[in-house]
Image 1 (cartoon, rainbow, N blue to C red):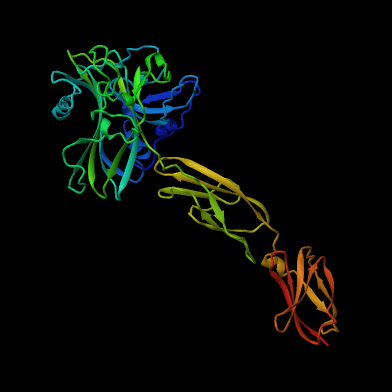
Image 2: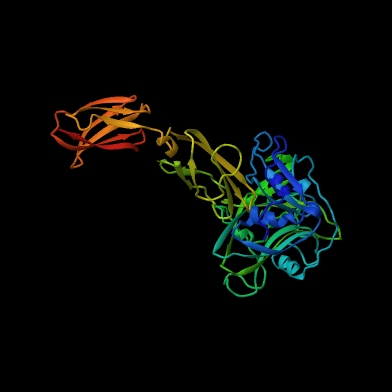
Length: 474
Protein backbone atom coordinates (compact mmCIF):
# COMPACT_ATOMS: atom_id res chain seq x y z
CA UNK A 1 0.00 0.00 0.00
CA UNK A 2 1.30 3.42 -0.96
CA UNK A 3 0.62 6.01 1.73
CA UNK A 4 1.70 9.26 0.12
CA UNK A 5 0.10 10.90 -2.86
CA UNK A 6 2.22 11.90 -5.79
CA UNK A 7 2.28 15.62 -6.61
CA UNK A 8 0.20 14.80 -9.68
CA UNK A 9 -2.67 13.59 -7.57
CA UNK A 10 -2.53 16.60 -5.30
CA UNK A 11 -2.70 18.97 -8.23
CA UNK A 12 -5.73 17.16 -9.57
CA UNK A 13 -7.60 17.18 -6.29
CA UNK A 14 -7.18 20.91 -5.81
CA UNK A 15 -7.76 21.98 -9.41
CA UNK A 16 -10.32 24.73 -9.80
CA UNK A 17 -11.65 26.42 -12.90
CA UNK A 18 -14.30 29.10 -12.87
CA UNK A 19 -15.24 28.49 -16.52
CA UNK A 20 -15.22 24.73 -17.11
CA UNK A 21 -17.59 23.32 -14.50
CA UNK A 22 -16.73 19.67 -15.22
CA UNK A 23 -12.96 19.28 -15.44
CA UNK A 24 -11.62 15.90 -16.57
CA UNK A 25 -8.01 14.76 -16.70
CA UNK A 26 -6.89 11.55 -18.35
CA UNK A 27 -3.93 9.57 -17.05
CA UNK A 28 -0.83 9.26 -19.15
CA UNK A 29 1.00 5.95 -19.20
CA UNK A 30 3.69 7.36 -16.91
CA UNK A 31 1.03 8.28 -14.34
CA UNK A 32 -0.82 4.95 -14.18
CA UNK A 33 1.03 4.18 -10.96
CA UNK A 34 -0.83 7.04 -9.28
CA UNK A 35 -4.07 5.09 -9.63
CA UNK A 36 -3.23 3.07 -6.52
CA UNK A 37 -2.89 6.24 -4.46
CA UNK A 38 -6.16 7.62 -5.78
CA UNK A 39 -8.08 4.40 -5.16
CA UNK A 40 -7.00 4.45 -1.51
CA UNK A 41 -7.33 8.15 -0.79
CA UNK A 42 -10.49 9.06 -2.72
CA UNK A 43 -12.37 5.90 -3.69
CA UNK A 44 -12.07 3.33 -0.89
CA UNK A 45 -10.64 5.13 2.13
CA UNK A 46 -7.42 4.91 4.09
CA UNK A 47 -8.46 1.98 6.30
CA UNK A 48 -8.05 -0.65 3.56
CA UNK A 49 -5.06 -2.12 1.78
CA UNK A 50 -4.98 -2.84 -1.95
CA UNK A 51 -2.49 -4.87 -3.97
CA UNK A 52 -2.12 -6.24 -7.48
CA UNK A 53 -3.54 -3.14 -9.17
CA UNK A 54 -3.97 -3.66 -12.91
CA UNK A 55 -5.34 -1.37 -15.60
CA UNK A 56 -6.38 -2.51 -19.04
CA UNK A 57 -7.42 -0.01 -21.68
CA UNK A 58 -6.31 3.19 -23.32
CA UNK A 59 -4.83 5.75 -20.88
CA UNK A 60 -7.14 8.42 -22.35
CA UNK A 61 -10.16 6.37 -21.29
CA UNK A 62 -9.59 6.73 -17.53
CA UNK A 63 -8.88 9.71 -15.32
CA UNK A 64 -10.10 12.01 -12.60
CA UNK A 65 -12.86 14.59 -12.57
CA UNK A 66 -13.68 17.73 -10.59
CA UNK A 67 -17.03 19.46 -10.76
CA UNK A 68 -17.68 23.05 -9.71
CA UNK A 69 -21.33 23.97 -9.44
CA UNK A 70 -22.43 26.85 -11.67
CA UNK A 71 -26.11 27.50 -12.34
CA UNK A 72 -25.30 29.37 -15.55
CA UNK A 73 -24.14 26.15 -17.22
CA UNK A 74 -25.91 23.51 -15.16
CA UNK A 75 -29.36 24.46 -13.98
CA UNK A 76 -30.36 20.83 -13.48
CA UNK A 77 -27.36 19.72 -11.45
CA UNK A 78 -24.68 17.04 -11.52
CA UNK A 79 -24.06 16.57 -7.76
CA UNK A 80 -20.70 14.76 -7.75
CA UNK A 81 -17.77 17.01 -6.88
CA UNK A 82 -14.77 14.80 -7.69
CA UNK A 83 -13.76 11.22 -8.25
CA UNK A 84 -12.78 8.61 -10.81
CA UNK A 85 -14.03 8.58 -14.41
CA UNK A 86 -13.90 5.53 -16.71
CA UNK A 87 -15.06 5.65 -20.33
CA UNK A 88 -15.35 3.50 -23.45
CA UNK A 89 -13.47 6.18 -25.39
CA UNK A 90 -11.93 9.44 -24.22
CA UNK A 91 -12.58 11.24 -20.92
CA UNK A 92 -12.57 14.59 -22.75
CA UNK A 93 -15.97 13.83 -24.29
CA UNK A 94 -17.50 13.66 -20.80
CA UNK A 95 -17.06 17.40 -20.26
CA UNK A 96 -19.39 19.98 -21.80
CA UNK A 97 -20.53 22.01 -23.44
CA UNK A 98 -22.73 19.40 -25.07
CA UNK A 99 -22.53 20.87 -28.57
CA UNK A 100 -22.54 17.54 -30.43
CA UNK A 101 -24.88 14.62 -29.93
CA UNK A 102 -22.62 11.96 -31.41
CA UNK A 103 -19.20 12.30 -29.77
CA UNK A 104 -17.03 9.24 -29.38
CA UNK A 105 -13.55 7.77 -29.60
CA UNK A 106 -13.30 4.34 -31.22
CA UNK A 107 -10.16 2.45 -30.22
CA UNK A 108 -11.56 -0.66 -31.95
CA UNK A 109 -9.81 -3.05 -29.57
CA UNK A 110 -11.76 -6.25 -29.00
CA UNK A 111 -12.10 -7.52 -25.42
CA UNK A 112 -12.37 -11.26 -24.92
CA UNK A 113 -14.14 -12.32 -21.71
CA UNK A 114 -16.64 -15.18 -21.95
CA UNK A 115 -17.87 -14.70 -18.38
CA UNK A 116 -18.81 -11.05 -18.91
CA UNK A 117 -20.24 -11.71 -22.37
CA UNK A 118 -22.48 -14.49 -21.07
CA UNK A 119 -23.49 -12.36 -18.07
CA UNK A 120 -24.59 -9.49 -20.31
CA UNK A 121 -26.47 -11.80 -22.67
CA UNK A 122 -28.27 -13.52 -19.78
CA UNK A 123 -29.32 -10.12 -18.42
CA UNK A 124 -30.54 -8.99 -21.87
CA UNK A 125 -28.13 -6.09 -22.12
CA UNK A 126 -26.72 -7.33 -25.42
CA UNK A 127 -27.62 -10.04 -27.90
CA UNK A 128 -25.46 -13.10 -28.35
CA UNK A 129 -24.07 -11.79 -31.66
CA UNK A 130 -22.64 -8.65 -30.07
CA UNK A 131 -18.89 -8.48 -29.46
CA UNK A 132 -17.15 -6.58 -26.64
CA UNK A 133 -14.83 -3.71 -27.54
CA UNK A 134 -12.86 -0.82 -26.07
CA UNK A 135 -12.96 -2.04 -22.48
CA UNK A 136 -11.68 0.18 -19.70
CA UNK A 137 -10.82 -2.21 -16.86
CA UNK A 138 -9.50 -1.48 -13.37
CA UNK A 139 -8.74 -4.49 -11.14
CA UNK A 140 -7.17 -4.91 -7.70
CA UNK A 141 -7.24 -7.03 -4.56
CA UNK A 142 -8.53 -5.44 -1.37
CA UNK A 143 -8.47 -6.39 2.31
CA UNK A 144 -9.70 -4.60 5.42
CA UNK A 145 -8.52 -5.41 8.97
CA UNK A 146 -11.97 -4.61 10.35
CA UNK A 147 -15.60 -4.54 9.26
CA UNK A 148 -15.77 -1.80 6.67
CA UNK A 149 -18.82 -0.36 4.91
CA UNK A 150 -17.99 1.71 1.83
CA UNK A 151 -20.65 3.78 0.08
CA UNK A 152 -20.35 4.99 -3.50
CA UNK A 153 -22.17 7.46 -5.68
CA UNK A 154 -22.21 6.59 -9.37
CA UNK A 155 -23.39 8.51 -12.43
CA UNK A 156 -23.49 6.73 -15.79
CA UNK A 157 -23.67 8.88 -18.92
CA UNK A 158 -23.73 8.09 -22.62
CA UNK A 159 -23.90 9.51 -26.11
CA UNK A 160 -26.09 6.52 -27.03
CA UNK A 161 -28.98 8.38 -25.44
CA UNK A 162 -31.57 8.55 -26.82
CA UNK A 163 -31.51 7.78 -30.55
CA UNK A 164 -28.91 4.98 -30.33
CA UNK A 165 -30.32 2.93 -27.45
CA UNK A 166 -30.14 -0.68 -28.59
CA UNK A 167 -29.16 -4.17 -27.39
CA UNK A 168 -27.08 -4.52 -30.56
CA UNK A 169 -24.40 -2.03 -29.50
CA UNK A 170 -25.14 -1.18 -25.86
CA UNK A 171 -22.37 0.13 -23.62
CA UNK A 172 -22.34 -1.18 -20.06
CA UNK A 173 -20.68 -0.64 -16.66
CA UNK A 174 -20.13 -3.36 -14.03
CA UNK A 175 -18.50 -3.48 -10.60
CA UNK A 176 -17.61 -7.11 -9.97
CA UNK A 177 -16.61 -8.42 -6.53
CA UNK A 178 -15.37 -11.91 -5.71
CA UNK A 179 -13.79 -13.39 -2.60
CA UNK A 180 -10.39 -14.98 -3.08
CA UNK A 181 -8.01 -16.96 -0.86
CA UNK A 182 -10.69 -18.16 1.55
CA UNK A 183 -14.38 -18.21 2.40
CA UNK A 184 -14.90 -15.64 5.15
CA UNK A 185 -17.68 -13.53 3.64
CA UNK A 186 -20.98 -15.42 3.11
CA UNK A 187 -22.15 -12.74 0.66
CA UNK A 188 -19.42 -13.40 -1.91
CA UNK A 189 -17.75 -16.39 -3.51
CA UNK A 190 -15.06 -17.00 -6.09
CA UNK A 191 -17.65 -16.23 -8.80
CA UNK A 192 -17.65 -12.47 -9.55
CA UNK A 193 -20.83 -10.67 -8.51
CA UNK A 194 -21.88 -7.29 -9.92
CA UNK A 195 -22.85 -5.17 -6.91
CA UNK A 196 -23.93 -2.20 -9.03
CA UNK A 197 -27.08 -3.31 -10.80
CA UNK A 198 -30.20 -1.16 -10.94
CA UNK A 199 -31.81 -3.26 -8.20
CA UNK A 200 -28.90 -2.45 -5.87
CA UNK A 201 -29.53 1.31 -5.92
CA UNK A 202 -30.02 2.41 -2.29
CA UNK A 203 -31.39 5.90 -2.89
CA UNK A 204 -34.34 5.04 -5.15
CA UNK A 205 -36.62 7.01 -2.78
CA UNK A 206 -39.87 5.94 -4.39
CA UNK A 207 -38.31 5.45 -7.81
CA UNK A 208 -39.96 2.42 -9.39
CA UNK A 209 -37.00 0.30 -10.49
CA UNK A 210 -38.98 -2.22 -12.51
CA UNK A 211 -36.08 -4.40 -13.66
CA UNK A 212 -32.83 -5.39 -11.99
CA UNK A 213 -30.25 -5.01 -14.73
CA UNK A 214 -26.60 -4.03 -15.24
CA UNK A 215 -26.11 -0.31 -15.81
CA UNK A 216 -26.48 0.48 -19.51
CA UNK A 217 -28.32 2.87 -21.86
CA UNK A 218 -30.53 -0.11 -22.72
CA UNK A 219 -31.47 -0.89 -19.10
CA UNK A 220 -31.88 2.70 -17.86
CA UNK A 221 -33.72 4.53 -20.60
CA UNK A 222 -36.71 6.60 -21.64
CA UNK A 223 -39.17 5.43 -24.28
CA UNK A 224 -37.34 3.95 -27.31
CA UNK A 225 -38.60 5.45 -30.54
CA UNK A 226 -36.36 3.19 -32.66
CA UNK A 227 -37.89 -0.02 -31.29
CA UNK A 228 -41.19 1.45 -30.07
CA UNK A 229 -40.49 -0.01 -26.65
CA UNK A 230 -41.47 1.42 -23.26
CA UNK A 231 -39.06 3.07 -20.88
CA UNK A 232 -37.06 0.94 -18.45
CA UNK A 233 -36.04 2.25 -15.02
CA UNK A 234 -36.68 5.75 -16.34
CA UNK A 235 -36.80 7.22 -12.84
CA UNK A 236 -33.01 6.81 -12.74
CA UNK A 237 -32.54 8.72 -16.00
CA UNK A 238 -31.81 12.41 -16.72
CA UNK A 239 -32.35 13.66 -20.29
CA UNK A 240 -29.63 16.08 -21.46
CA UNK A 241 -29.90 16.71 -25.24
CA UNK A 242 -27.81 19.73 -26.26
CA UNK A 243 -26.95 20.23 -22.59
CA UNK A 244 -30.50 21.34 -21.78
CA UNK A 245 -30.32 19.87 -18.27
CA UNK A 246 -26.62 20.44 -17.57
CA UNK A 247 -24.40 21.84 -20.30
CA UNK A 248 -21.31 21.15 -18.19
CA UNK A 249 -21.78 17.46 -19.06
CA UNK A 250 -21.00 16.31 -22.59
CA UNK A 251 -23.31 13.30 -22.65
CA UNK A 252 -26.84 13.44 -24.11
CA UNK A 253 -28.20 11.61 -21.10
CA UNK A 254 -27.03 10.39 -17.72
CA UNK A 255 -28.34 8.87 -14.53
CA UNK A 256 -29.09 10.41 -11.19
CA UNK A 257 -26.31 9.90 -8.60
CA UNK A 258 -26.94 6.26 -7.69
CA UNK A 259 -25.96 5.12 -4.21
CA UNK A 260 -24.32 1.68 -3.83
CA UNK A 261 -22.66 -0.11 -0.91
CA UNK A 262 -19.79 -2.55 -0.51
CA UNK A 263 -19.31 -4.14 2.91
CA UNK A 264 -15.99 -5.85 3.62
CA UNK A 265 -15.62 -8.50 6.30
CA UNK A 266 -12.50 -8.36 8.52
CA UNK A 267 -9.45 -9.96 6.91
CA UNK A 268 -11.36 -11.29 3.90
CA UNK A 269 -9.54 -10.87 0.59
CA UNK A 270 -11.57 -9.63 -2.36
CA UNK A 271 -10.90 -9.10 -6.05
CA UNK A 272 -12.50 -5.99 -7.52
CA UNK A 273 -13.07 -5.62 -11.24
CA UNK A 274 -14.51 -2.32 -12.47
CA UNK A 275 -15.23 -2.36 -16.18
CA UNK A 276 -16.99 -0.23 -18.77
CA UNK A 277 -17.11 -1.46 -22.35
CA UNK A 278 -18.79 -1.08 -25.72
CA UNK A 279 -21.07 -3.74 -27.14
CA UNK A 280 -20.38 -3.77 -30.87
CA UNK A 281 -22.01 -5.20 -33.98
CA UNK A 282 -20.17 -5.36 -37.30
CA UNK A 283 -16.77 -4.56 -35.71
CA UNK A 284 -17.43 -0.85 -35.21
CA UNK A 285 -17.16 0.78 -31.81
CA UNK A 286 -19.33 3.83 -31.58
CA UNK A 287 -20.40 6.59 -29.26
CA UNK A 288 -18.81 7.17 -25.88
CA UNK A 289 -20.20 6.25 -22.50
CA UNK A 290 -18.64 7.10 -19.17
CA UNK A 291 -19.10 6.40 -15.49
CA UNK A 292 -18.31 8.84 -12.66
CA UNK A 293 -17.54 7.21 -9.29
CA UNK A 294 -16.88 8.80 -5.92
CA UNK A 295 -16.80 7.67 -2.33
CA UNK A 296 -19.91 8.89 -0.54
CA UNK A 297 -19.41 10.85 2.67
CA UNK A 298 -15.65 10.70 2.49
CA UNK A 299 -14.70 11.13 6.17
CA UNK A 300 -10.96 11.20 5.54
CA UNK A 301 -10.96 15.00 5.62
CA UNK A 302 -9.29 16.56 8.63
CA UNK A 303 -11.10 18.87 11.02
CA UNK A 304 -8.22 20.54 12.85
CA UNK A 305 -8.59 22.02 16.32
CA UNK A 306 -6.81 21.97 19.66
CA UNK A 307 -7.33 23.01 23.25
CA UNK A 308 -4.92 23.72 26.08
CA UNK A 309 -4.75 23.54 29.85
CA UNK A 310 -4.61 26.32 32.39
CA UNK A 311 -1.23 27.97 32.31
CA UNK A 312 1.08 26.70 35.05
CA UNK A 313 3.56 29.33 36.25
CA UNK A 314 6.74 28.26 37.98
CA UNK A 315 10.37 29.22 38.35
CA UNK A 316 10.99 27.56 34.97
CA UNK A 317 8.43 29.71 33.14
CA UNK A 318 4.83 29.26 31.97
CA UNK A 319 3.98 25.67 30.97
CA UNK A 320 1.00 24.84 28.76
CA UNK A 321 -0.30 21.34 27.94
CA UNK A 322 -1.94 21.07 24.52
CA UNK A 323 -4.80 18.71 23.63
CA UNK A 324 -5.06 17.78 19.95
CA UNK A 325 -8.79 17.64 19.07
CA UNK A 326 -8.33 17.03 15.34
CA UNK A 327 -10.52 14.39 13.69
CA UNK A 328 -9.23 11.53 11.54
CA UNK A 329 -6.20 11.13 13.76
CA UNK A 330 -5.03 7.78 12.32
CA UNK A 331 -2.10 8.15 9.96
CA UNK A 332 -1.61 11.88 10.49
CA UNK A 333 1.63 13.82 10.91
CA UNK A 334 1.58 16.74 13.36
CA UNK A 335 3.72 19.85 13.40
CA UNK A 336 3.47 22.37 16.25
CA UNK A 337 5.00 25.84 16.09
CA UNK A 338 4.88 27.58 19.48
CA UNK A 339 6.91 30.70 18.76
CA UNK A 340 5.74 31.75 15.29
CA UNK A 341 9.10 31.28 13.60
CA UNK A 342 7.80 28.78 11.03
CA UNK A 343 9.84 25.87 12.42
CA UNK A 344 8.48 22.74 14.07
CA UNK A 345 8.87 22.76 17.85
CA UNK A 346 7.10 19.42 18.41
CA UNK A 347 5.70 16.57 16.32
CA UNK A 348 3.82 14.94 19.21
CA UNK A 349 0.07 14.57 19.09
CA UNK A 350 -0.45 16.17 22.54
CA UNK A 351 2.68 18.11 23.49
CA UNK A 352 3.53 20.53 26.26
CA UNK A 353 5.63 23.66 26.00
CA UNK A 354 7.20 26.03 28.51
CA UNK A 355 7.26 29.70 27.56
CA UNK A 356 10.10 31.79 28.96
CA UNK A 357 8.77 35.18 27.92
CA UNK A 358 5.45 36.89 28.67
CA UNK A 359 3.22 38.30 25.94
CA UNK A 360 1.06 37.00 23.09
CA UNK A 361 2.30 33.80 21.45
CA UNK A 362 0.90 32.47 18.14
CA UNK A 363 0.43 28.70 18.30
CA UNK A 364 0.10 26.88 14.96
CA UNK A 365 -0.86 23.23 14.51
CA UNK A 366 -0.35 21.75 11.03
CA UNK A 367 -1.84 18.33 10.29
CA UNK A 368 -0.92 16.24 7.26
CA UNK A 369 -3.08 13.25 6.30
CA UNK A 370 -0.44 10.81 5.09
CA UNK A 371 -3.04 8.89 3.09
CA UNK A 372 -4.82 11.65 1.19
CA UNK A 373 -1.98 14.19 1.22
CA UNK A 374 -4.33 16.83 2.64
CA UNK A 375 -2.63 19.52 4.73
CA UNK A 376 -4.65 21.68 7.12
CA UNK A 377 -3.48 24.11 9.79
CA UNK A 378 -5.01 26.26 12.50
CA UNK A 379 -3.54 29.06 14.63
CA UNK A 380 -4.49 30.48 18.00
CA UNK A 381 -3.05 33.10 20.34
CA UNK A 382 -2.08 32.36 23.94
CA UNK A 383 -1.33 35.24 26.30
CA UNK A 384 1.38 34.67 28.89
CA UNK A 385 1.22 37.15 31.76
CA UNK A 386 4.39 38.65 33.25
CA UNK A 387 6.04 36.24 35.66
CA UNK A 388 9.16 36.05 37.82
CA UNK A 389 11.65 33.34 37.08
CA UNK A 390 14.09 31.94 39.62
CA UNK A 391 16.99 34.10 38.49
CA UNK A 392 14.95 37.26 38.94
CA UNK A 393 13.51 36.20 42.30
CA UNK A 394 17.00 35.81 43.73
CA UNK A 395 17.51 39.55 43.18
CA UNK A 396 14.34 40.56 45.03
CA UNK A 397 14.75 41.74 48.63
CA UNK A 398 11.66 41.90 50.90
CA UNK A 399 11.54 42.77 54.60
CA UNK A 400 8.98 43.36 57.37
CA UNK A 401 9.83 45.87 60.10
CA UNK A 402 9.60 46.26 62.95
CA UNK A 403 9.19 42.61 63.78
CA UNK A 404 8.08 42.00 66.56
CA UNK A 405 5.70 44.98 66.58
CA UNK A 406 2.57 46.27 68.28
CA UNK A 407 0.58 45.42 65.15
CA UNK A 408 1.72 48.36 63.09
CA UNK A 409 4.53 47.50 60.67
CA UNK A 410 5.81 48.12 57.14
CA UNK A 411 6.47 45.74 54.26
CA UNK A 412 9.24 46.87 51.97
CA UNK A 413 10.23 45.21 48.65
CA UNK A 414 12.90 46.02 46.12
CA UNK A 415 10.40 45.06 43.35
CA UNK A 416 7.24 47.07 42.80
CA UNK A 417 4.27 44.67 42.99
CA UNK A 418 1.60 46.63 41.14
CA UNK A 419 -0.84 43.72 40.94
CA UNK A 420 0.22 41.75 44.03
CA UNK A 421 -1.55 41.40 47.34
CA UNK A 422 -0.84 40.66 51.00
CA UNK A 423 -2.50 38.00 53.15
CA UNK A 424 -2.08 37.56 56.92
CA UNK A 425 -3.16 34.37 58.73
CA UNK A 426 -3.35 33.45 62.41
CA UNK A 427 -1.90 30.21 63.79
CA UNK A 428 -5.22 28.44 63.07
CA UNK A 429 -4.92 29.31 59.36
CA UNK A 430 -7.74 31.86 59.43
CA UNK A 431 -7.38 34.79 57.02
CA UNK A 432 -7.05 37.95 59.09
CA UNK A 433 -6.27 40.50 56.40
CA UNK A 434 -6.05 40.72 52.60
CA UNK A 435 -4.95 43.95 50.95
CA UNK A 436 -3.43 44.90 47.59
CA UNK A 437 0.28 45.53 47.42
CA UNK A 438 0.71 48.56 45.17
CA UNK A 439 4.25 49.77 44.96
CA UNK A 440 7.36 48.97 46.96
CA UNK A 441 6.11 49.80 50.47
CA UNK A 442 2.96 48.90 52.35
CA UNK A 443 1.97 49.99 55.88
CA UNK A 444 -0.07 47.41 57.78
CA UNK A 445 -2.25 47.96 60.86
CA UNK A 446 -3.50 44.89 62.73
CA UNK A 447 -3.06 46.38 66.21
CA UNK A 448 -6.60 45.34 67.08
CA UNK A 449 -5.63 41.68 66.79
CA UNK A 450 -4.65 39.62 69.79
CA UNK A 451 -1.03 39.33 70.73
CA UNK A 452 0.74 36.30 69.32
CA UNK A 453 2.20 34.64 66.24
CA UNK A 454 0.94 35.41 62.70
CA UNK A 455 2.01 34.55 59.17
CA UNK A 456 2.29 36.97 56.28
CA UNK A 457 2.36 36.03 52.58
CA UNK A 458 2.91 38.23 49.54
CA UNK A 459 1.39 36.84 46.34
CA UNK A 460 1.68 37.97 42.73
CA UNK A 461 -1.18 38.38 40.26
CA UNK A 462 -1.08 34.64 39.49
CA UNK A 463 -1.67 33.79 43.16
CA UNK A 464 1.90 32.55 43.48
CA UNK A 465 3.58 33.15 46.87
CA UNK A 466 6.65 35.30 46.34
CA UNK A 467 7.42 35.99 50.03
CA UNK A 468 6.40 34.54 53.40
CA UNK A 469 7.40 35.52 56.95
CA UNK A 470 6.42 34.96 60.59
CA UNK A 471 5.44 38.10 62.50
CA UNK A 472 4.87 38.67 66.22
CA UNK A 473 2.49 41.10 67.92
CA UNK A 474 3.51 42.02 71.46
